[in-house]
Image (tube, rainbow, N blue to C red):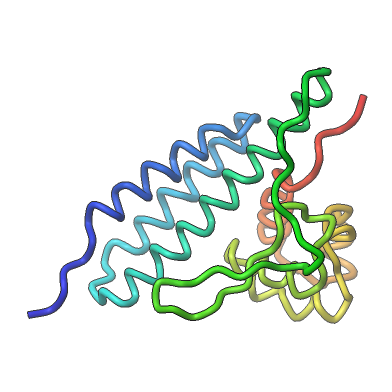
Length: 185
């Protein structure tokens, strides 16, 4: 008899992802993340291999933790800008990435919370995690670091990085939006 798929874990992760999506400040971002979350879970509903389900759960948990860290960082910046005591900063280290264990025990590289400190490899990892890994080689060949990533616009994606699909460029820009610091007034 095959091991059972951890249905309660899947349901719990889906709810956590949807709660995190609801915390996005802009309506368009909230809606994008809600649809993205529902579609990611819908795509995985036919998966019956328990080992693959565990890997998908680990990946989903990593994504939601990253989203929650970004929400906490944005909230801390907003509190700091409003004049109250700053929130405790997200943990960072001198290394551009930190490691997390996937359910199978393999090391997985995850970028730090602050995209400005990302190196080219961390940008590539981010592209993989948001489902845009097909563009990783182009970003690496142009040595796109986190600082440069946050400055990219549609023209850069089209002409410099050869992202020919307009929808792909829009998706990259939509994924970048929550990473960018809020404009200072």
